[in-house]
Image: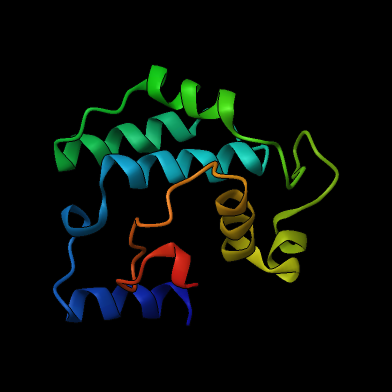
Amino acid sequence: MTAGEQVMELIQRRVRPRDIVTRKALENAAAVVAASGGSNQCALHCRRSRTKCGIKFDLFDVAEVFKKTPYIADLKPGGRYVAKDLFEAGGVPLLMKTLLDHASCTAIVRHGRGRPWRKI
């Protein structure tokens, strides 16, 4: 399913960001960014999401998640691989599974399709 199809499905089901964005979901998002070598720009995106949903999650919270998350994917610009390589290896679901296996994120958080990550 493409991202556009996913968005359309969520709209049809009347699922809004407030329905799936929780503090644990933001922690998971920050963990994926940290594990893939992403930038601290994540903090800006998380800030926008949490503001709209009324959740306390600031730059210090993102930094805490980054500190405890293993570096797994080694993506550019600082790493050796590009996002296409991650996608071909299994994408974010594989990265999340690896993080779940190492207790670096929370399995009970629901993703956009409504299922918990542990079911992926």
